[in-house]
Length: 285
Image (cartoon, rainbow, N blue to C red; front, side, top):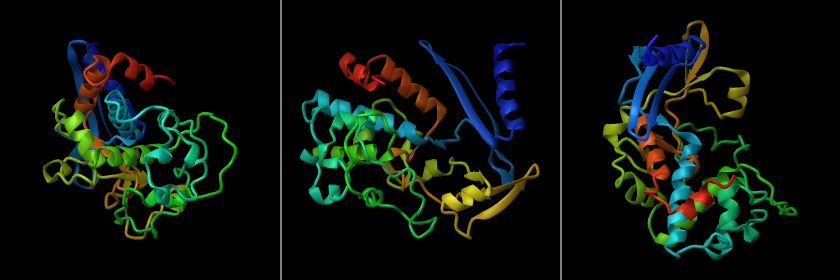
């Protein structure tokens, strides 16, 4: 069996196992050597995943933010040891645990204690169409401080705060800094921050969002009655496409394609975005 056929069979096995749609690609030093896709972007209309389909990339968004922060450090506009309270307004940090002692390095490495909102499930009045401001999620982490441990604890809030630091330092929106520093120079034409960058020509390539209609999802994800249900291969699904990623903002709200992500990763590896010392910081787990 040819390699491409073997890889294609792997994608199809995922579809057979219940994945609705998938896009994958492989690159080497010579660039992209293979790309394929399987499944559907819109189940109700049998629209397949294609070369132009883009997806929410979740916390890969954080890598883009980290690159911008590290570039600002290279430019001496920030320092990895800076306390975030030196760069953000006290009103934004009020009541937020150990925020006054947290450093930029601690946010980057997820070792700034007690700063998290990812486990909160209250939603914004359970309104799926609500547009979240870039500071709204901070209202879910205002709690008394606890002794710092310096241990790793993954947190969206860390990168929400880093996004605010980017904005305060540069005077520009975090998404515009990502665009002119990374997206435009690398010609990543299918990558954008959902809602904060309205690109109509690209939005049509975003597939519908489905979730298994489990009790736990309904209980914790803030599903409102307006979500439609769809049965696919005897599986009950919730179509959550009317929701948006604004709640994630710079912690997880970007949209991209497999080709763009490969180009981004290759550019990082080849030193086109960061110095070797900054890459060491980026990859210091």
